Image 1: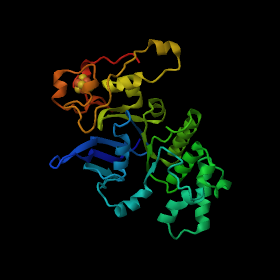
Image 2: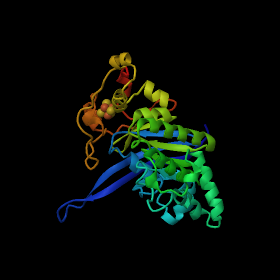
Image 3: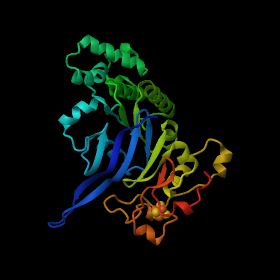
Image 4: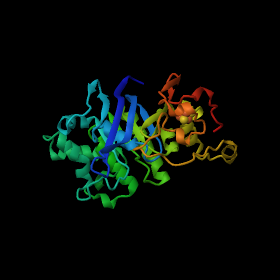
Length: 332
Ligand code: SF4
């Protein structure tokens, strides 16, 4: 795999939440709190974690759809942090997004030909209507939609077909990176597999990089080359897929993986089940030191004192835990 094309450095997204009372001021809701990673051309990086861990906010902040509070987003060597919508517009050709709810993300008043072709109209205003329709038909065919349906409206399609329309629209400009924000969560399992396979085929054909956000570890395992685990807006662990699933080092990753059912009943019986106690703390009042410490079975007094930094376990495997060297990976 080639060199990094997108580099995220200590990215923070804090939302000021006003408090009651005249002199109370704002409290920051720390949705993303110091995330760093890189993504290479042709790579899929899975981003996992419970609801509310900051996955979607991170994806949107990378694309500058939400302004970051601090840190840097560097795209192909250029710092794009805080660029205005007009300055970001040319970059949208390379940086696209697919949303979770396929039908809600499509304009019900436009035909699917207009929806898929809209980015072409924006970026290539001199392109003739016939050339645009031809490109739309080609892309429809490529994503498994019948080109003769070009004049139909979104409500005439199933959820899986609507997600194919969303993918066709994201792909029509031949982007280099797509942020996939829970793209299969709203779909039936059989349709999920079709959409995942389609994304993988498109990745191979066009050398795409994917940031694949999901709470479903089975889906993420299937599609990702590397996986990053988020908790309360911070990176707990990042590793290649096999290293993460074969030897998870962070207690949170271990709990997430232990919750994934194994189809083989004997293996499912034999594996260690780790149940996390308590709920995700509020991102407005995260625990001091290690943010996971209120739910961690290995927490000690020093876990409340210092924020654990990412430490190298091996080549591409890093974990943020003070005690990872003394925690035995469970049998999963
Ligand atoms: Fe648990 Fe402490 Fe490691 Fe945090 S730093 S994961 S609280 S052992």
